[in-house]
Length: 102
Image (cartoon, rainbow, N blue to C red; front, side, top):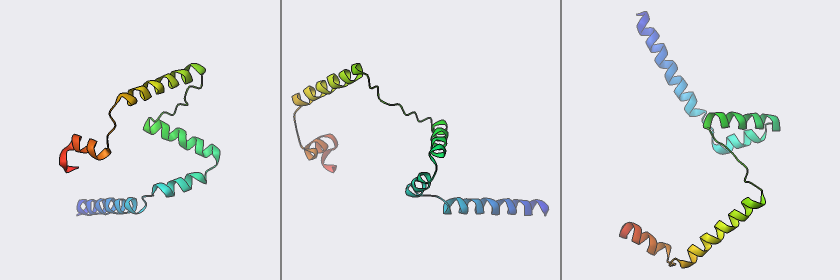
């Protein structure tokens, strides 16, 4: 009898924990609002903690003259390639790729 009551109690706790977690799920806007209320130091700590957990790496772009020149050169190559391509409508392209179901 003791074992059955322990199982029932555990099941009730699991159900309650599930209900609480579903009820307390915050929206992105709510989280963002809460983060904005943190001090800059706390925001930095939060950012570092999220980076550790999700393996998100934020890297600033290279501001060197060589990197800017390389970016401009690559952009010109893309523009030149786009000029040689045939321009079409989105509708025509999607129909060609997916058929009439688009």
